[in-house]
Length: 119
Image (cartoon, rainbow, N blue to C red; front, side):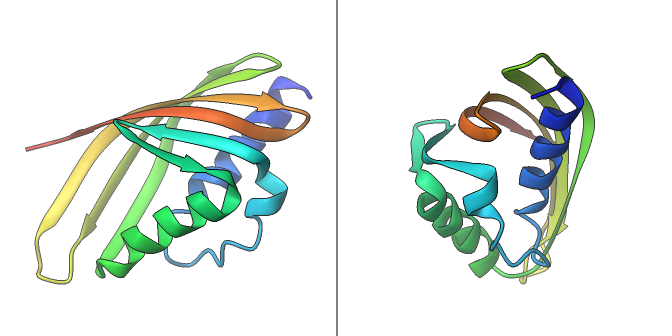
């Protein structure tokens, strides 16, 4: 896949966290044996990522995300991103993160995420 096609794939993946995405596209975006690394947590396959997103959403409130920058080649994409929102209890959160995505055969195979909340 071209670099631009990889960037489009990563942008689609980034939108899955927001509450207006129905998550039906995960089987197209993620490899069946996808592994997402987030600190000490790991999420396996589309179902593992789907459950992670549903857990985030179950906390209620609003979440908004965006991509600041994408860098990459034919198989790796580095994504610099931001997230902000308000929990149901009114607490506001925001921060920035970096995720390295590995892409194989047009799907996300693995990623590594680091998130830094801002205080």
